Amino acid sequence: MDAEEIKNQPTPDAQVGAAAEETEENFNPNWASDAPRGGRAVLTRILKESATVPLFFAQTLVQSLRDVGYNTRTSALCEHVDNAIEAGATVVRVYFRQTGRRGAHETDILVYDNGKGMAPNVLKVATSFGGSMSYGNRKGIGRFGMGMKTAALSISPVMELYSWQEAAAFYGMTLDTDAIGRDRSNLVPLPEPSFNSILPEPVLDMFTRPVGFPKDATEQQLLAPNTTNVYEELGTHGTIVFMPDCDRLTYASDRKLVEHCVKEMARVYRRQIAKGLRIYVNNRSTQAVDPTYSMANARHASIEGLNAKTSRLVVAKTIQVPLNDRTTETAPVHVKVYALPIDDWSNLTRKELGSSLHLFDGQVVSILRNDREVYIADLHSERNRLISPVGRNRRNGHLLVSNQVGNIGSMVYRCERSL
Ligand SMILES: Nc1ncnc2c1ncn2[C@@H]1O[C@H](COP(=O)(O)OP(=O)(O)O)[C@@H](O)[C@H]1O
Ligand SMILES: [Mg+2]
Image (cartoon, rainbow, N blue to C red; front, side, top):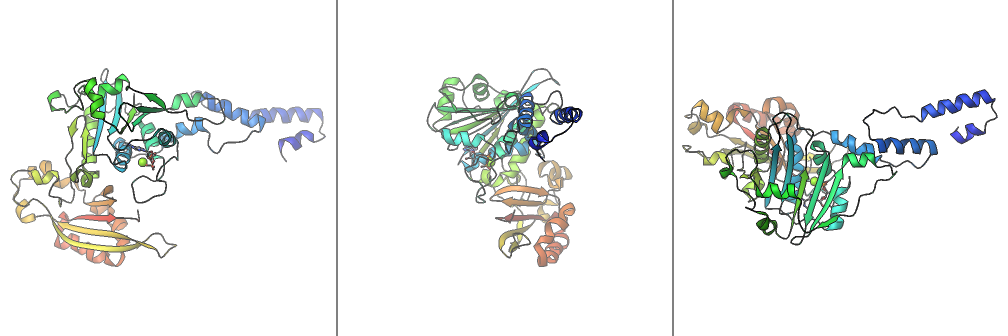
């Protein structure tokens, strides 16, 4: 029986009064005082007027999406680097600028790339949740149309985007969660992108002035020495994601943010860096770090005093893994096991093995998808979970790792489709 039918029932007056009260109470949302006011107004109106319900309540959903999990801040920032790589970027710059007193500082984060940029209509779609130019396509990295937005909003309440496909024609879009929360319309539309021939001051500032860390400004390679040159450097295509006044980083110092970012990105994007991608974090270029020690152009290979520079490939196998348990369709997983050059490296001191080579970090199982690391773990905690899908090769793989190679084996699963 719906509200209309109830109203039409021949009931005594007293009962009608009680029903009305009850209904009023039903329609009174029990929201927190700081919950989005616009959202509350919309919800109440919809309940009272029995209006069409949108599949998503924009005012509240955008707030809730801020808490959709990224394990680390760096993993959120990697969403922008993934997009940059897909847009064909050869340079990515990540900035953490901290201002104000320690403990009460403001942190602005910016990711710039020199990829192909977005046309205004693409920019508009890209700002929308679920909006993607490669939805469901497993050839690239992104495929859900969520990454850029959820990642940016998971650290800042505001995402400012600038993208251009010709010189000094910057199209801008802003997602401001507080402003959306105040909006009282049932359907929150995205505005047209704004056209700008110049960039806002805080953005220009990132490109032209040293950031606080590293402290020694001479270590920092700025994009441009002044605002005139900046537009030349930004060229005819690129994208900027600006996350001002990040409110989810309260206790993190810029030094910590930078160090974690460098450590993760150096490893996650090692193959792209080796192929020529330059990733700068706070104006310093990042060198590839290879947990399998097999790449000749990664950081470990430039450590002085090593005779053997790389590990040795001892197993290379392609295994067909079923996509899921309802299909016989399979996807190839390339498994590689490497042995470290123990004879040579056993002569090194513990300190060299630890702080230079990082051999004790325990990260020995690395899973890549389309040349980007998607998972890293130590062998013991992940042995059952990761090695068992390899099925009948499990035993050999395991024996090889623990007996012949010892605990120093590194394993790479290169997974093309099944992850
Ligand atoms: N840095 C960028 N350069 C060019 N296009 C981008 C960039 N970032 C995002 N885009 C566009 O925005 C769309 C949405 O990005 P995102 O929310 O990360 O979802 P997905 O990557 O899953 O498509 C992408 O499909 C792409 O077309
Ligand atoms: Mg993406």
